[in-house]
Image (cartoon, rainbow, N blue to C red; front, side, top):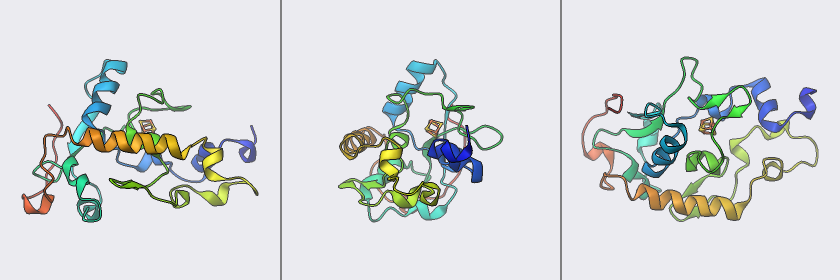
Length: 179
Ligand code: SF4
């Protein structure tokens, strides 16, 4: 297939690392349970602080503080040696859509506890779209579906065993594998 005719994610991959190769993927307890049930694996998450310390500042969405433990770490998918997500295969994600972490399902929508953010465009390489193409249509993303996943995400982070307290109020940051 000519690159110009390839799906947007493939075109993205031809010019840069994709979201599945560079992003840290937070997984809810529900995500982890669904993935474990589907894959039979127990080695796909770790507790880690964010690569970007600015991520610890969630003052504009305080519910998100629930994802951090007392040391500023949250449950993220492991990566392969080359940085790819552990579930990235040669033809894209190897997990079915209803098993993928909720944050993956919503991409490229931004969100908070109160709703979706209006502009999803800045998260994808829209200059690679052909004239007249709309990002969400090309990705087959639907706002109502994404809103349902967003609501589920914030319900599931309530099952985190962490109180919603700013990490920097609770001590330092370290990294270790989940036992
Ligand atoms: S779980 Fe799938 S969609 Fe999410 S980052 Fe990994 S490969 Fe990409």
